[in-house]
Image (cartoon, rainbow, N blue to C red):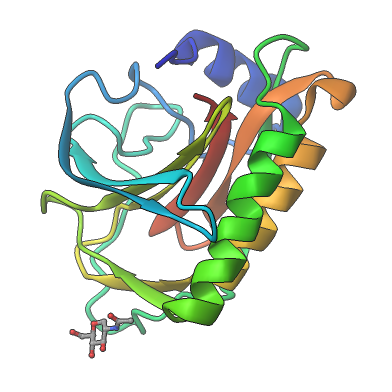
Length: 192
Ligand SMILES: *[C@@H]1O[C@H](CO)[C@@H](O)[C@H](O)[C@H]1NC(C)=O
């Protein structure tokens, strides 16, 4: 698995958007990924699904402060909640859109056959990261809240479609992420 240079991401985000509190990845992500389970989903059972945890994968702001909040009063169903999209510029290293489309379809298949909603355990538990991968395309949902969050496969599918096409090589980008406006979670699409 290939990881993006964080400095590139930071530079790109800071260059693209001037907001001072923009959440950015500050550390090389996931130096120590601990995978709890691996299964295959979709009609053809060809999309890899992993539950894991990375102790270094929280978003931090430009000053290195943790971007997350205690949210016990808030609803934990964040299906359809708004998120802000950030693409990483650079024409190389983008996932192939048709590979992402396979994940997009597998998510819709699972939403019809397994259920629309799924839970992602809280930050600090061994399974707060849910990753899907097919060939060059990798996407994950990261819960950085201190509560279990409920999300939906239909929305994830839309985000994979959106991020893969909007943050594509054709747009001089190589993937990106959508960060919840309340910053409790984000969905990333990148090269595997
Ligand atoms: C998610 O967790 C809640 C609380 O434990 C539970 O009531 C609900 O059935 C779970 N939903 C799914 C889709 O697993």
